Length: 589
Image 1 (cartoon, rainbow, N blue to C red):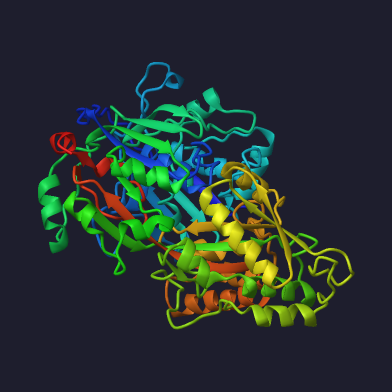
Image 2 (image 1 turned 180 degrees about the vertical axis):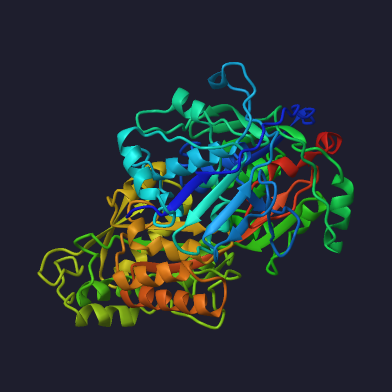
């Protein structure tokens, strides 16, 4: 990405306050138990990009802002910040006060001293996003936006270290108004990290994946890579209580949890259970406290109307359902010699592949109806989504075959598979994991592509390895998902922004017209004018087809009757600090 345009400045000297560490409230005899469906990659908020690692990071590290747990519609609120940002200079200058008296978890890196969170920790973290040594997948949060970032990058090339100016006040000078920045400030890559921790534990890349130390409600107790993660309540966590709510729908919940200090439960145990059957069996046996319903097993849990089956109701299990702010899609590597490029024959190939894949069968069989066909890159209930508009290619194998014949792919080999226009074999290689879910997808891709005469093979790797390969441009095709955790359509528009190649732009799509529209969208507030730009970007996606637009997922979560405080939150997958366990009810199961 080109030079960064956010000046991260500390301003306004404030005297440090000696604030006592709050009384420890968590019940260490209680444990929340849940499962991840794929392995984590590590716990450095500026270096990781997968949802599962991020869930751990959100429990350990803290951002300036977050989302209120109970409010619907969802509402951004201060976390470590004292108030919402003061914005001046037509949106170009942001001033943020950090609350004094917040402390990092104790760690040997602090040499036996209590370490207070200060503004410099955010400055340091944000500059880490720009450090070319770290190669952060989220450098685009601040790059091209902050005044003075060019010298920051040059300094990083020389030393990899930066200096902050002052204690409790942050000032950001933006080159242009940026109405997405507040959303970014709710995300883990913008969380504070301590320089001492990075210097003590950083690897050759400057990453600190195995020794996360933050100010959040939990700390990392133990980690067996790809198997189990155990978190423990942070004794240094500040005074924080379960939120109140004026919403009548939350009256009972708020009354039962009123005044409880957070976190309530002493430990969180996360096991990696990739296969659907063992995961659901673990919940049914009482070994997990909550679990997302595996979509391939939803008919064993839900009836035809989407309600819980009687056996679950009888046990007191509750169900929470949402349409996620997420898109499942398959990308084509636009630099790949077979599927990439902007020539008419390559565009036709990508469109034919997209039309040839049997999406209706996938939703019906693999997802058992727990998904909605994608109509556009931005999912429902987000700025930029138009419920009355559809640019996704429909399943139409006859049209796919006709398109291939017309644009030079009519030739066939002795096995009946199509050839490239130059007579060479046409072969697709789709990346995939060894999970049973991906095996189902692979079988459907194989069946669908065979129907239009295209040979397809599958590259099997673990999820963390595929992430690395995808960012490096080493995959031809891969079906992936992206979830928006900051309530902006921008989360999906940026996935095809040219400068994000090597970060979040796995398709390596680079189109000047798209890039200019994207930059313009960031300068506009939410509203009709910005939505027009999102629509134009979506039209370009439809025209050049760097993605197969798949589906929007419906997420259903089962919660055991002994869990207290749970409320489904689309931007907070694992709200551990708000949860309690009724041990007597649990023992009586």
